Image 1 (cartoon, protein in one colour):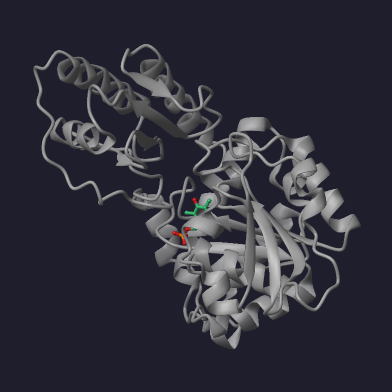
Image 2 (cartoon, rainbow, N blue to C red):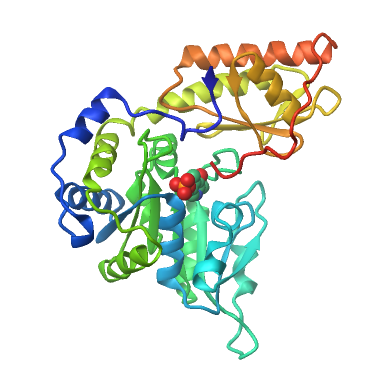
Length: 362
Ligand SMILES: *Cc1c(COP(=O)(O)O)cnc(C)c1O
């Protein structure tokens, strides 16, 4: 099987496993795991922040990030397609009593002009606008890298107007490698930044939140509240340290492989890239409804050894990663082309599939 469902499906490499089994450990709830300390310092340095906190998932680091900036009855602004709003069960409401104001970007990109009028006045009827959240790269936006100047502009506007800023950087290193703009340059515009080790970096688990030391002290407290205090967490922090040393530069490989798939989609009648440009490792394309639904197409690909995800009735997502090399991606691209042709010619009949089985947010 060529598994292109997500960059989360990677298995730790032997070298990563060796790093994990040889790491010095301690109880991190006592704040005495040396490997976790090392990782947190490394992440803080990489992102140009004072401190960082290690946590089990990106959902948790996002929710801690939102929480350190807001009190119950506060509101944050975000792009309507973002992970925090769509794929975290409204945890900001469930766990922190917050409201959200999602704003639809053009191709998932917000412009500062769309936000200027959204800060609510000081009035006892209203929630308090406190925070802006951005996502880079944008998962549902086909791995889009946000325009650097646009990010700087939104954050400067937010800070000028007393709002905090949080970056969901689950795939920030993809953005850094794709643009050559280092992670700390992206991060400097934000008060807090969340990064994931379990996506393109190939770790089995782990995310981190970085920001000013007093906020990270608070973040550690909230992490405990959310159930994210971990004991000998150095065993997984070691994987993250290994990945930061060895798996960042190679993201360029995933981006190059994604272009093979993008080119194949562009060259196939019945398939269409949406949007047409691919910046990093996520490809989203639609299939002509005359040929098949997205779920039918995914089932047909699976029968031929390629795993992808239906993200709507017409759209399919494929993601390149550490465990699929260029040759495998090229094979998958060829299979997608052959499958499209066979379905269009009526040589292959779509299987009956469960339309509710779309998978979200990965
Ligand atoms: C995967 C992802 C997250 C966090 O996901 P977890 O599975 O909770 O680690 C957050 N934001 C984006 C954009 C993601 O793609």
